[in-house]
Length: 96
Image (cartoon, rainbow, N blue to C red; front, side, top):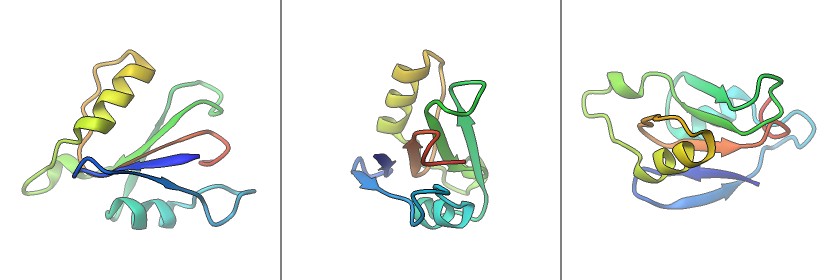
C-alpha cells in the first residue's frame, strides 16, 4: 500500500486508480499538489521502493521540509536525502 507523507505530518494510505498500470504521473501530481513529479527508486530494476515528489519543491518561494518522509527515506535508503513538500512512498508495482 502506497503512503502519502504530507508536510503537516499526516500519513495517508493511497491506491492507484489502475492496479495493473500503477499510479499515473497525473495522479501523483494531484496527490502531491504539484505540476511536475520526480521519482527515485532504491533498486536498479525499478521493482524496489519508489519516492515520488515535487520536482520543483526547492524552487518554491517557501519550500516546506517534510520531516517524516525524509526520516523514512533515510531509514529505507541509508542515504542523506532531504525531501520537501508532499511525498509518495510506494512499491515498484504501484509506480511504473
